[in-house]
Amino acid sequence: MARSAFFQDPDLDQVFLRDEAVLEKIVGFAGLKKTDTVLEIGAGPGNLTEKLSSKCGKLISIEIDERLKPVLEEKFRGKNVRFIWGNAIAVLSKEKLRYDKLVANSPYAICEPLMHTLFTQKFSSAVLTLPWRFVERLAANPEEGYYSKLSLFSQSFFRIETLLRIEKDAWHPRPDTASMVVKLTPKKPEGSDVLVREIVLQDDKKLRNALREALMNTGAKTKRSAREELEKLGIREKILDRKVSEIPFDDLQDVIRRFDNAG
Image 1 (cartoon, one colour):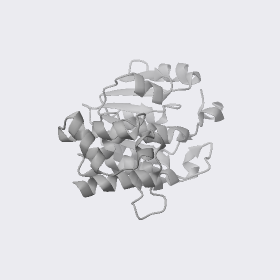
Image 2 (cartoon, rainbow, N blue to C red):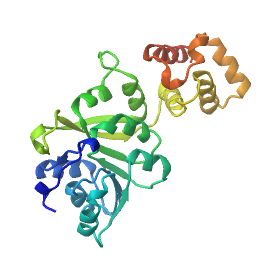
Image 3 (cartoon, one colour):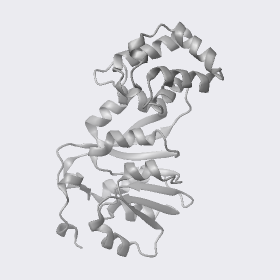
Image 4 (cartoon, rainbow, N blue to C red):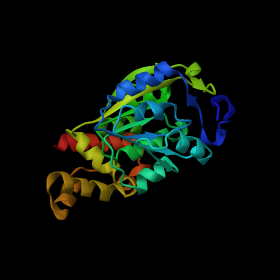
């Protein structure tokens, strides 16, 4: 299949990176070794897949568009690539994939759910290509207007480095926005990061229960002592009774400040 003969599906938010120099830089940023198992999200026509597979020991590539299956499986037959066909978020949520590093030129529509999924994954580093405005939110500091839950949560789990801006002409078809390559490196939690992580990983629970579990997990407290400590913080009942995912950002920041001051 010639590259120009493949018509991307707009419903899958497909744009394919075709700039060879940029592809080489992304692989370089990943710092791959022959001992690495690498996870790729969004194989597309295999432009990046080919470069990754030549540098690592094993490549696992997740691709949702099964129209690409005969092309990719023929192109990489007998090579060190395993393809998984399906939605990457669903695959990562259900399967316990073991890999060292992650590289993703994934559809921009899944950026935020992908970040939340990565909070539960184990890897040494991830190189992601993301819309540059999304990266602004991801890396924002508390003094900036676009600092948000996404910023707080992501920075509690990862050290975030912005590496390369990719202009629109590097893609086919040409997207509406420029892109940014970022590197995520898991970091050891310190201070309020510990609490934030515990809250994030229990975002389907009421804040009261999530905080109690967080206190028990981080301070070796009993359920009773955690409940007593929680009561001392003076957090409003209507906030405690809401699900973590539904807490307004200002209220969440207030909760974290109360814990910091109590400590």
